[in-house]
Image 1 (cartoon, rainbow, N blue to C red):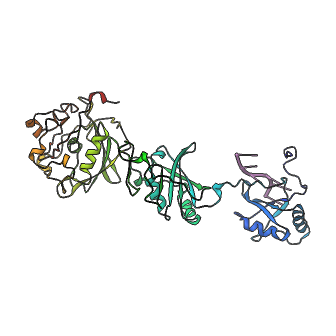
Image 2 (spheres, protein in one colour):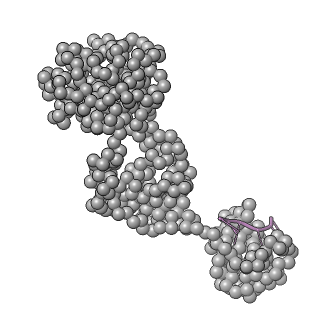
Image 3 (cartoon, rainbow, N blue to C red):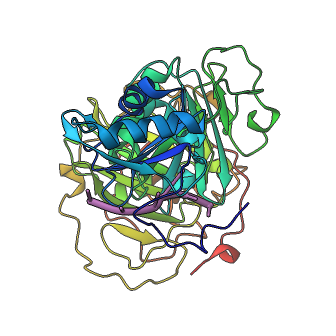
Length: 438
DNA sequence: AGCACA
């Protein structure tokens, strides 16, 4: 192709071309308006609008050079200038011989959106959160997610381009609501159209979903037991198990202290670290066990149960993305129980004495898992075969945690629970000592 | 009011 760079950028008289260059167009002139303008002179085969820094220039390409010449000739001698929306447009032959339309799939409206999730935690955004966000605009048929150099991306399939467009217009450049992303930093959505019209989803997995086909087989990699993820048959529940639990406390009528949490969660195995923080006006806590199995047991046993009788301080548990909490300082909100004799900052005696703490009666509903259900006084006694509980019964009954290896002396909660549930358990004893981090 | 896009 002949190089145009050897010519000046423009001249006052251009050699004829079937491409015309238009300027002084009204803002956001449409292709349709350009076609209307050129149609009287011939067949408009291509257009390009919103050109130039001011986006007020455009190109019209005719099928034949003579048609372009006809248009230029007409307006060269016409008393009425070429107009779009009453605005005079100036036209001349372009210095190009054809319009190269770089219009990519990203610009052509379609029913499938290409979504790039931006942010340091972008790849932690679950497909369920994406589904929730996009479902606000219509039925989401399918979602696939993948990693590209552009980052973490998803394809979201709607029924039609109109629905997809409404989602794109509303969400492009905006961030996923923070309440949908506990623990995660801001995640911004960049949305274009995809060239796809129907995504191919072979399995329900943590990477892809087909919401039109609930009977689609679950990917082997998403089946419970492989240690990676669980997925329900409804294709909706997806949880990645973790050794760290995120606890949200609902209906917090009574103060829930670090020590109370430690006591409650220690019933299922050694608690390594706890971090408490306020989130969305409620109290949340991260509780770290040495292994995922212990966390799973604790979650199953405690989910939905109340720390105190009467529906107070109801626990809602999920798996955290964290695997090892970074406890910068031991205080009344966070503690690393793996460090012996930690310097406790802001150590303050518990405000609530045992008498002011409501008795921890049985949970509103009995624990379901019989293996971990404290059904009787006897069941609350630490069993000798209970892996990590080696304390003599008498001691364990009053101060169940005191003799545990991971529980250094001097860190006992001041308010050991009277009547605290003490489930039997069979978690093998992990090696706490070697597991210290940071 | 004067030539895009990679």
